[in-house]
Length: 340
Image (tube, rainbow, N blue to C red; front, side, top):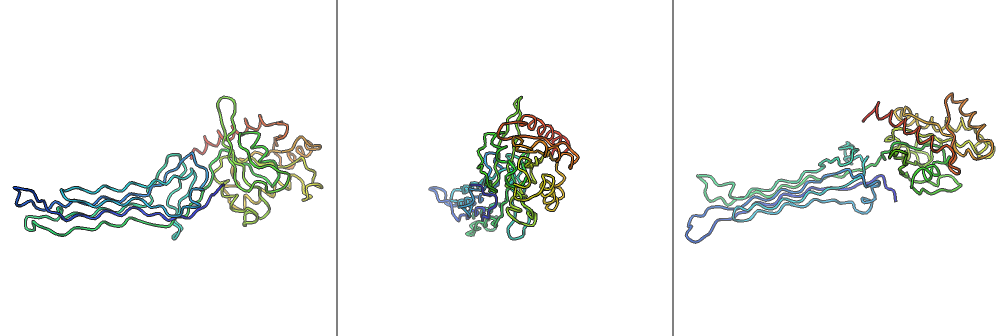
């Protein structure tokens, strides 16, 4: 199950109490105070784990608590500090304070960590209060409470290439042919209801991370259909592969719109959602080239757009190798111009 949003409560550990104690040993009539300090509470630390790709771990567990510090004891023994709680999240997770809406951290890079809540400091024992004029103190400090807060977690997938297009444009089929991913494929719209990730292997030990994202519909930028649940994940991709169905004639597609008009529908939704998203490098890909009349509609689409359109067939595998090489070139150009 793919979960990309969650709300959780986190609390750092409480500091341990200080101790009131006096040294009592044979032949030492004036031992004096020897109460130790309490240990500090554990912190709550978030870490980006490249082995995770969903927030499923937070769907059934809403409270995450770090360990409390142990109290001090006699003999000037300091209590053990509480262990830090490391919360592992997928790369691309944004951590927000739920109440204020403030983003606390955007965990993008693998291994990146941030301390969200600090543990409470341990209280001082009576040994710390001893002075030349107050040699038998009987006071100590309680441990301080740890920080706590409600968090909202949002995951934005990180991928080299994002597949966009209307429902049934062939995105899932392409992902299944280009990688080992097994997305659901059927001959009706919205078979993909959640993002799917796949790794496409290229000659020379090269690889591309490809995200198959649920199909857009008109009005998605205002929340129609899958709306923002879909568009949020495209923001992390470096390059967009815009898939357009040229194999199905307009009179049989149910929309009576040409491939160029279908292309403009998606472009309008991207621009309405974010100007940054609309400015991403894009490769237009004509799909279902194995069907009758597809090549003519591909040429017509290229003429209408005034740019080359690469034709592929997920069924026969036609054009998949040139597509991988072209996407690799675009990703490398983007990495060079925008390393962040």
